[in-house]
Length: 391
Ligand code: NAD
Image (cartoon, rainbow, N blue to C red; front, side):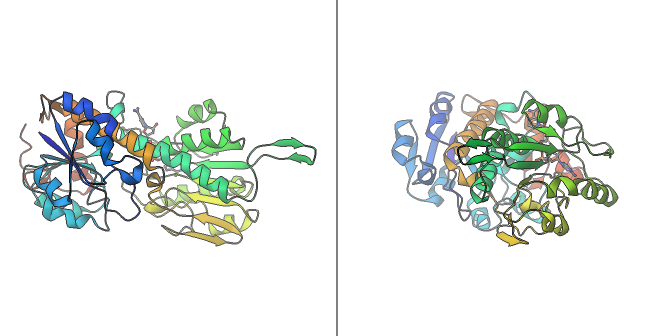
């Protein structure tokens, strides 16, 4: 089977779905790999490296889609809501598509993907289990985002992060608060600690406490307990507005005492909870920075504008989106390893096996034969069970 790597088309997207490093393993497993010319150039992977590792380079996008049995992308239509629609007419029945498809985003978009007839797999749906760890692209991108958000916040802050004792006096360390200690949050804690900041973190999942502490962060204990804080998949759950109101009340003091807030609190498929109010921002010292990694999902800060950086009450509120694209070399490398692990898992002797008894296959399969077939997604959108899943 032929795996096709088109150049990413989302504005500002510099990642590429497969890097040269993973190609020999795919070739060894019986796949052929074709890559659109310059697909990896902006991530630091020139065409020559792909050729060296056994891939073919094709001059145009249409040819890649036309020749490929499996199209692999970073941002596919669904998550690419700017230019992704143009790919729909290039996809064909029976072809396989793997990428970020935003499965809990818009059902209309998912139906459009389904109508092309592609068998699509959404990397967001990879189960967060030990067995699927090597395929977990959400964790890879979360790691990159947490790291980069801290660097960008540090660069914006008019203070330095570490404590310094110098002949010119002692400099106190920056205080960083991380809200939401999932993968991105934990990486933000580790990065801010390495830069010398004093870090505290909060998450509504009690399980996060130990992880925060193991990274040298102080866990902020709030005297409220979330109802069923964690779902069966390990994700934080949505709470009612009265819980969020109480969270805001209790978090307020910690927020105003922080120089930097890195906000990552999200719930799959839901608008992000507002945990940092305009009032809290007003109370922060001038020059403070809020990096809202939840910006794309509505933001954890009331003043966040998705895709923009604004200064309010002297505080810089960063709502930049698609941060992983700003570290394209390693983001692509990690993503490519996740994709290659997934393809090698599904593929035997260069052919994909669709064994729906298998948890990873069943949970990631999004559309097939014109229908959105994924059970979690159908339940989320309150659709009736599909007519037949086949095997
Ligand atoms: P995420 O991006 O969905 O959410 C980020 C964090 O925000 C989560 O920790 C969540 O609890 C938190 N959050 C949500 N609402 C909040 C609120 N109101 N206040 C404070 N915090 C709030 O999370 P993620 O990084 O994708 O991780 C999801 C889960 O999966 C975690 O439990 C993580 O440990 C687990 N995980 C497991 C594996 C594995 O076992 N292989 C791999 C990766 C992640």
